[in-house]
Amino acid sequence: ELRESELLASVPTGLLIGGEWRQAASGATFDVEDPATGKVLVSIADAAAEDSLAALDAAAAAQETWGAVAPRERGEILRRAFELVTERADDFALLMTLEMGKPLAEAKGEVAYGAEFLRWFSEEAVRTWGRYSVSPDGKSRLLVQKKPVGPCLLITPWNFPLAMATRKIAPAVAAGCTMVLKPARLTPLTSQLFAQVLQEAGLPAGVLNVVPSTRAGATTGPLIKDSRLRKLSFTGSTEVGRRLLSDASETVLRTSMELGGNAPFVVFGDADIDAAVDGAMLAKLRNMGEACTAANRFIVQDSIADEFTEKFAARMASLNTARGTEPDSQIGPMIDAKSRDKIHSLVTDAVTAGATVITGGTPVDGPGYFYPPTILTGVTEGSPILSEEIFGPIAPIVIFSTEEEAVRLANNTEYGLAAYVFTRDLNRGLRVSEKLDTGMLGLNAGIISNAAAPFGGVKQSGLGREGGLEGIEEYLSTQYVGIAVP
Ligand code: ADP
Image (cartoon, rainbow, N blue to C red):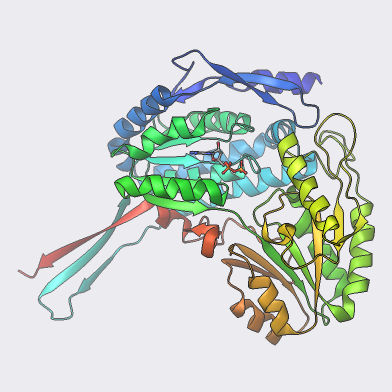
């Protein structure tokens, strides 16, 4: 308790604009709650349009100087930030558990994962290659160079408060872009602490500006219309992403969109069932299922469906649901009441349509927004639980008999972010991987996120990639110079 209050008291409560922490111009503040108790943790400044415009002023003013800073120097700021976040891993983990609810052990995992983007892009900062070539007719030379795209607006969701911020900020820093970050209303504290760490790491004033806000549209809308803004990177729901894409069309703004998912988890009869169950636990329950890569539909071959379901259910039923700060917590609360109610209505609708609850299925009584790990079988095709992103610890199981049917079921969604395939047959694994319309695929793996890999989707799961060699490209523009041969 003492440690919690000390940590909370150390988090900056202002807006970060031009290197200064300051109150919102209106003086407005808002409360950040603990989803395990519903209690207020701390109150912070609530930005409005005038504040976010001041933040864009600062970002635009810093762009030219920042873009000219040596790549090595930008990389070294990221490397120091990696060291500082790693040193303060316990603080970041506890803060995320407090504001987001995930168990401490998982929060620590996110600190390691989130920090990895800082290390990766500290290395990538010095590797933004262009090229020089002879034109096909031999009469000129073609110089292709990369430049920072310019001031960026970064909008992040609440589910991975640190990693979603580092995944955008680190490549922007590496590329030489300045930024305005609008963190999620429900989990702004981690971004606040991280911004402070970046200041300590030597990030110059105005390069990163942070504007938490309760009115996301009103606060970010004017920036999207402003011709000084050159890039929007958004992670969140497909619904909001669509709206932002339409707003961005006005200034033909460059966008990166990491949107919703509806990942199929396909288990073939020839799979190692125990490995598939391990994978299922990770793919379903990492972050309590509140991940866009979470397995949303389990598509299991008839020959092994009973064995898989029985083993999976035993593991799901054995988990301890408790506030994330409890040492034995394995499943924390859902982010809020609305989210829990939506999950429960998906379950009850599926049951009304004929599905059977194997384990779970009833919200947990008491304070906080807890929902138990749940397995449903006999889910009918067309059930909303199969087409909507669940964002909770619910596993609907659907049975198939042929490979063709599995592929058809897996692709039967407007989303295309992640998929998981379990089989011992490598040829089948590769064949099915090629047929699945997703940006990412775990082959006998229940967890695929990696700073060194390109994260992103196809179809309505988004545009662009974060991480990997691709991640920095999102923050660079290409300029070609045609040179006449003297
Ligand atoms: P989720 O909350 O499920 O992660 P959202 O798409 O609602 O997904 O939110 C993701 C981020 O987008 C949050 O930071 C949220 O405040 C922000 N956001 C929501 N609506 C808008 C909007 N109209 N314009 C800009 N940002 C928005």
